[in-house]
Image 1: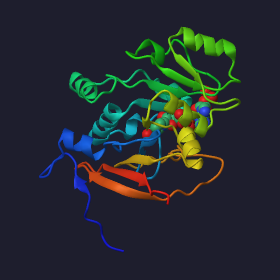
Image 2: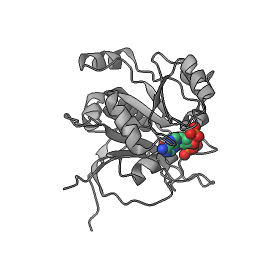
Image 3: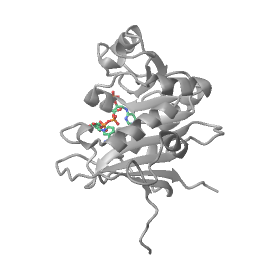
Length: 255
Ligand SMILES: NC(=O)c1ccc[n+]([C@@H]2O[C@H](COP(=O)([O-])OP(=O)(O)OC[C@H]3O[C@@H](n4cnc5c(N)ncnc54)[C@H](OP(=O)(O)O)[C@@H]3O)[C@@H](O)[C@H]2O)c1
């Protein structure tokens, strides 16, 4: 064991990372034969994923910068219905420069939000549908209440069936592939991430540790009925002067 001195300085002092260096550090693999599932979370030093039911109190400037960078690089932002309900999700916003960079690299100017909701249990009047410049996607299952499904379609959603009785991880990844969405950014929450991790479907985790203790009753970043150990290797570790630590973990390639 050795003391690690490899954390890269983030936003202050010598060696400050530029925005373009940050985009390179978080670039998706160039050739993707299937969807690459990247997840992004922030937690407190003591492991809380939220404070009073939301993640806002854990945010820091460096976390926000990486959050925005990851959105700019993604074809789609996948999120569980619990997070959409808790955080009142609206559509992705990207500034003019970021939109231009996306267009120049052959991407759409904005990634859609794609919500995983087995019950199609979303408010058709919420910001998800009312405050977005791009059509949101809802991944649901064949068993979902047809009335709720048609309400969401009428609210402007592209509804995609990705399973019979539940949205399975395989069903979700296959549906993303069929839509041509391979640079996937999953923003949680813990149930969706836990399910994907439990099914060995996570390629990468970007994890910010915010420099706070939070206590409380909040859970971990992943919860699932059964454990699944997946070997991960650090791609980089960044540190900001306020104590924020940003890590990028990639699944060890399987032989
Ligand atoms: N710190 C962070 O970075 C961060 C990130 C995200 C969320 N959060 C926090 O996490 C909390 C929400 O956690 P959560 O676990 O309830 O949210 P979640 O994972 O976003 O949502 C769970 C819901 O997703 C739907 N779902 C459908 N298929 C699923 C599948 N295969 N696996 C899992 N879920 C599926 C279900 O909704 P239906 O019932 O509609 O079918 C389920 O109730 C909030 O407090 C939020 O602030 C924190």
